[in-house]
Length: 112
Length: 112
Image (cartoon, rainbow over all chains, first blue to last red; front, side, top):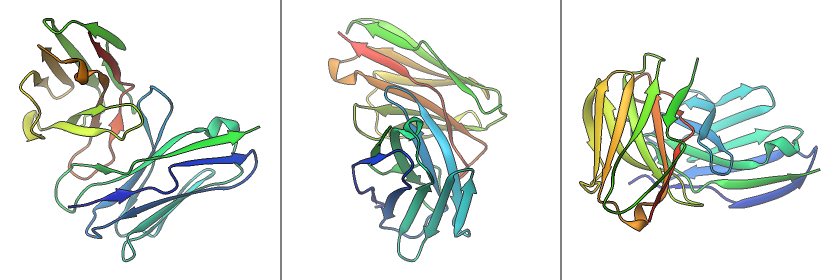
């Protein structure tokens, strides 16, 4: 059974600092990995999706890496801003099927 | 347009009421999902529809009844709910199996 872990559970940084968010998974037979952002009481916003054949995916200040062999993905957010404060979740579907397994999330606070 | 819409935004219902949650997408996606999310927890999958047919039911109690009238619409019918069913209910859609999921803003349900 796939297990997805995100450490730390919470993170507080001053504005301008780079954010590094970690996601680990136990079964490397994944089809892709998706990073989401969630603001309190709101739905999930898809940030990046990395296919299992990719090592990296970039969108603006966001960069996500994927190392299937070690079961890890990292989301980097450059030059953090207070508006980046949110919970960030990673999720993986199994190689067959479309059921996402989510990590517990990392709550990020960027202080002005 | 990558929008998934959900109505209502908020719903308060008694344990004897019958209500429905609605979800709509116009992206031509063929897979649609219902998730339940409790406070400070990741979303939990409830149901998956693929090509308007129920493909996954995560052993959800029968007081939750999904319906997919057409490829753009997904309903969740609620009956005789319990207070512990109070949560944020999220709808999502994707092009197909193992592709990027897009989430709606959710319906905040309170059962009294």
